Length: 353
Image 1 (tube, rainbow, N blue to C red):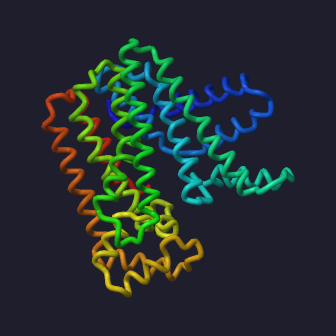
Image 2 (image 1 turned 90 degrees about the vertical axis):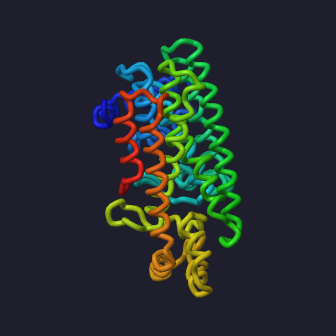
Image 3 (image 1 turned 45 degrees about the vertical axis):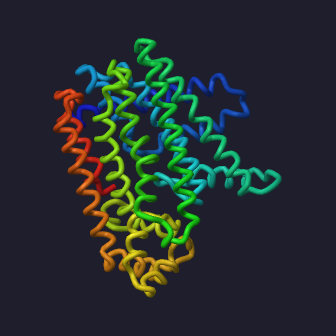
């Protein structure tokens, strides 16, 4: 089993997503159906379905068999991802997502178009939060409906609870970091957010869910967790590099993280190592949606000249080496799954989009 073979399941995953929305639509009051349609459009708009593929990988790791029995749970992780993205976009005041308008902005526009009373912005946020919440039951249902033994489903539900809780912890710390002067945010603070948020729901828990539903015992997952945590943090550090506009020509990303004021490792390192003039250049951009392209480029040059970009690349490389070392030395991760996990690691940290 390799990643290319797993990826051939994506059409089936997306068919499961469409089916879930179709079933929901049939049982919902007529006034609710347009909102379900909005969620369906958002979820199916794009994305690599990588978390879903990791559920499939975890099941194959545990069983050595085709992961067809957990296709529904893999699709359920895409509903969870939509929940997180919808709420993230509200928190970050994001205008776009996956090449389209962010969902809360779409609802704000609908408020204006339909001539509704009250504040369009408040309506968009309120409806957006609720639409995000509406995605969670799909994930829970997918685990309950999985054709796995009851004990395996219970273990998977416990993992889902842990994933949800730790992701929320990470989000809370991320929001708090964003309110602090960059000089008060430590590297450890940034990495704590990445461990609790990105690593858990991007890598660790998707792998665990598939493995648990495949019959692996919770007590045998420590090595898989250590591997997933290292690679999940490296994944987010790579995302931060892309989000600052580096490799932008290939990834299609801009410097959104800078104008959104995110306290990434790049920013924290540059602030610590830079001069007062460097900090001034960063200050003109961080959290400033009106920053000029020239100011953004000067801020990006600070990230280069202070060594922040090189430092982030070194941290990515070190975490990747450690994670792969743990994988290769592990006696609890089945040997049949190690080549697939190595391929997943490469995809996580070497991507340009």
